[in-house]
Length: 68
Image (cartoon, rainbow, N blue to C red; front, side, top):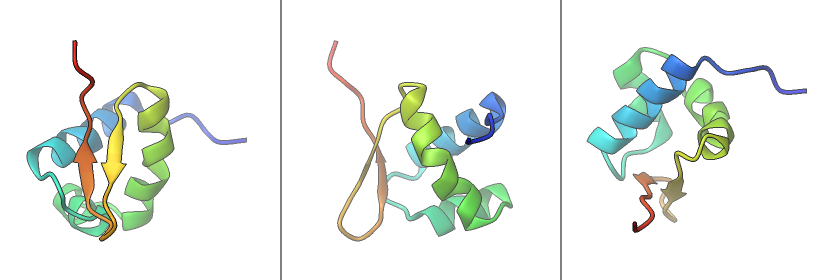
């Protein structure tokens, strides 16, 4: 059973991805001062919260915004 994620931490991860689109999880983790695994483990929780990401074939993360 997955443990609950801190909403502030999830938001921080997503904001860094928005600020640095196309960067890999390791880069985002270094910016936040956390382990890369924390970023990669947070990705499904971000999706569950509606904060969608696209991962390119090189591992870069891109924020995905649906049209209104």
